[in-house]
Image (tube, rainbow, N blue to C red; front, side):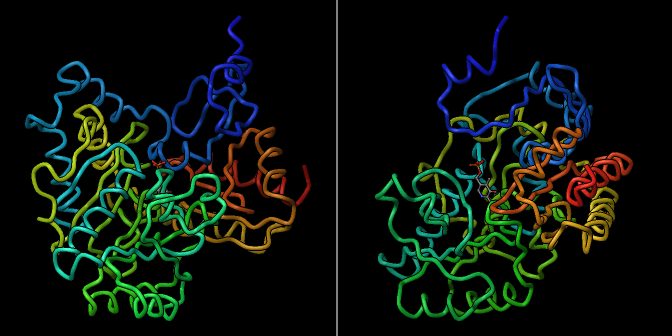
Length: 390
Ligand SMILES: *Cc1c(COP(=O)(O)O)cnc(C)c1O
């Protein structure tokens, strides 16, 4: 017998603390382990499986493209990535898109564009970028530097220079850094995901956007996790009343396949020219065909549904026994529980519900199209586990 757990410990880099669970199959919000146990998945592969496991429309689009033309390199024109870029621009208000393969890569592109823009327009020493404490922007050396959490930095120094950190919801802390340094851009997550599922204040974001605009400093919004319908609008900034200069996204865009997108606004849309940036696998036709099928299903009906399900979860958990607070936006939800998050997650898994953590919180990122009945059933298990009924 092929013992996956033993072989993993022998042959894979041990970078992940895995749950003791081997998944073998999934459909919609349900999945099954190798012993035949069924689970309701409220993690979506960390906000990746936007439409759950093996969505039919997505699967057919991917298979169709897979049997037609799987890869060409970016030396040739292909239709799927062009259509996807058009859709993203029409629906976001941004003007051009660069495709890579991950969130970190989308953020790398944003950082390169911001530096290029500011150095061209303001001078060579305008390369610094402000990010927020408790942020998460990726694992490459540059996006690690952008990540405002020292725990991730240790052991890998020196990181890319030119990153400074401000406090969330504190415009003065941004102003202070701008006064004393030459700043190209400010990069923020509107809902900090890995940092504890905290949504930024709307007034802070609007005042920040106005302040940056006055000073010709670019606003980069990292929607790698919060994008693609997750918060109840296609992108979270659409409900914050701001138009960023650059928006990055990844996780949920491909519906389960790797893609990252860096969307460029009016100011920066023509900064990148031939040879200045690239990605061999970027804009892959199969993945883009799948992403188009995901995007076409994130319509007004689905987004309304996301808001309805979000309201249901907030109402269910707020003030419930064993739950101290509920945070987040849309179907990106954090629970501060009386018992340690790890314990709640373990017990819920034993009861057939898969959850994530974020810092000290339990994190919920259900597929956007999860059936209401399944969501209610899972919420009931969480309530019972948090109140120690189970
Ligand atoms: C996950 C995440 C990233 C990194 O994405 P990868 O695809 O793992 O490189 C960047 N920013 C945010 C906000 C994320 O949640």
